[in-house]
Image 1 (tube, rainbow, N blue to C red):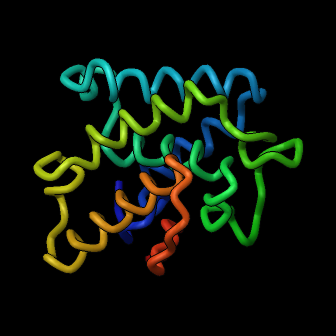
Image 2 (tube, one colour; image 1 turned 90 degrees about the vertical axis):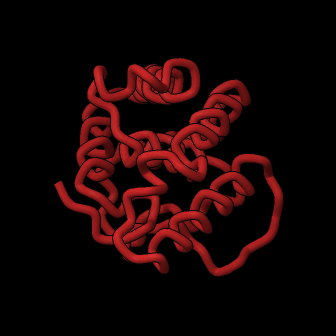
Image 3 (cartoon, rainbow, N blue to C red; image 1 turned 45 degrees about the horizontal axis):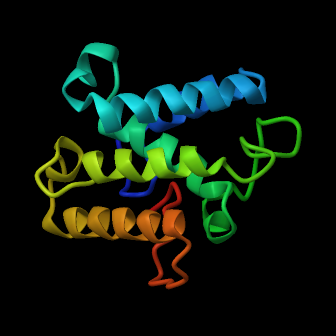
Length: 154
């Protein structure tokens, strides 16, 4: 599995997770997002045992963020595998799911976490930190854009 950038969906793990979500009806997507984010937020020590990596959790956070008004930069420009029009959620994520995403982001995106420490170059590590900060602002509704889009080709 590879990582090609610091963006939210810039890894094979993230892309595979999106593919898995695309195959589910929307209600099951919500359940899968809740499961993934819940493990990261409430049982982080068991993430590996359950096949979760930081990039997967970050992708789940990104899906939730993309459903919010300030998260539109996360929406894909090209192919949309998700039906109906919602990518991959047709409406804003429920408030409890947004709160869960924020807690999961705090675990996965924390300084010293596996995802944050996994960057080879210092500049990528700094950019990854900016991605986490940007996602947190989207999830809290704080409107401040610093040029980080969280996309796939950072």
